[in-house]
Picture (spheres, rainbow, N blue to C red):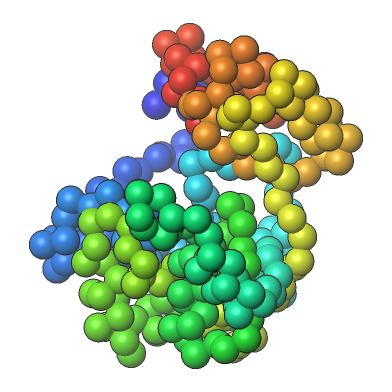
Amino acid sequence: DEFVKLNFPDTTTAIEIVTHKTSFEVYEKYLPTFNSATIETMLFRIPDLSEHFVFFNDDFFLLRDIDPEEWYKDGKSVAVGWWKSLILGDFLSFVKPRKNGKRPLGFKDRMRRTAHFLNYRFRDFHIQHAPHPLKNSVFEKFYKANPQVLESNVQYRFRERAQIHPQTLFYLLGLKSGQCVMKPEKVFYMKPVNRGESYVDNKIAFFDKNHPSGVCIGSLDLATPQDREKIRKWLQEVIDVRFPQSVPLTDLR
């Protein structure tokens, strides 16, 4: 990878690309899939995956070194999020304006669906687009006991309201069993789409003042070329990296 060679010329750690065919072994009939919930459900089936592994979305950037206890404290996964009213969330989703006659299906809907699936009645655990420190054994144990749930969740090639959310499933199981510890804090976030001219400048100033461990930058590919360039230069300064000249700004996500 050109980026790795440019920034980490002495690294001996190889990057391994695992295809869906590998993680979907025995379930190949559900491929190809374009559904993030389906794909993430199968992450624990990656061969030789560590017991403790951290899941990232592709729009999250680490801005400094991470202390292991930020993700695993006393052997427990740190769940960044907080409890929310399940009843209120269901009501707000029900009254949300339809698009093309259909109820919008988003991240929060899958979190609530997972809480309902596990028989929560009054609250659900709200997580964010952040690194998720997970444990392989929690998934293995749950799906070994509930193989029908695994197959039910991976059968959909596109987003489906009936699906449960893998990371929410892990945290709800972990918080109940004592394998997770809750850390109620918000993730630093920006989405530079259809914003004012000063939006990115103000966000960068806020991040520089508060020194977060990381930042989620959503829909960067839809930002203006000027805002993409500002963010690129800021990232270069903060994390001291260089981007290959062959990588266009639209590919920085």
